[in-house]
Image 1 (cartoon, one colour):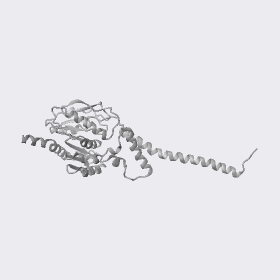
Image 2 (image 1 turned 120 degrees about the vertical axis):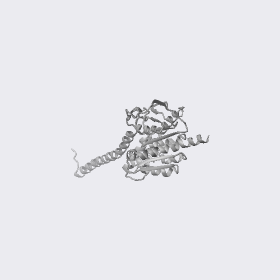
Image 3 (image 1 turned 135 degrees about the horizontal axis):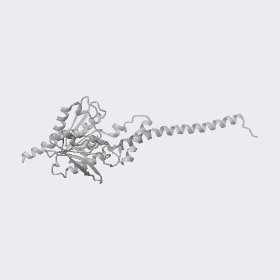
Length: 316
């Protein structure tokens, strides 16, 4: 019977333990690497695939006359909308934020309708069964489909159509106005200036290796799901294309996305106005300053969509 010497026994044990240690280190390293990757996938998927947040409210709840409308998109899908007729032949498109339904911004629709504007408010891609959100880019195309519908109506002057949106739809409104010249005015509330930089932090150069991996996972997941480069979510890059059409940017002094408002205002030029509502958080502009909100919004659309038309009629 062969017996190992004490020295060989020690060497064998050390070799075995070293192999085990290497395996443990590799397993831990792989786990540490996979955690931020998995978190990025989960986080972005949750952003792009929320359930429909439809509201049971209808314009009738606000004492409004309305039509139940279906908009056919260029992709062949159908989007439900509410059309509220007006008296001044001008119309405002209200883009839905993230996963909201067509009833999500009816208080604003009622305010605009009280001042003679026709309003079209439509549902999000999630509520229409059109797959994942894109957080603004594809949604800008949806605004284009809604614009095309309004241009077919005999009760709407195609030269008097504006657009507004809040939060992600604020970004959508800017992206849409830059893409569609027939949108004559835009109000964007609380939207990001550049999603990759402001919401994800890509390009900042800050953070640990694990944070960088997490950010890259977010970006890659977005591209794989939507087919779009996340850098396309950048109103600040295209807002100058809207000139000379007027822009009103509305933000609260207490909201995180305010920096994006300043960046857009600087990039847009003299046709853009930035209103910062003091002591207001995200989406609380009208609650904090109800009278000024109504005055600013209505006067903005009046100047942009009605004044020029009235001057032309007077000259004729």
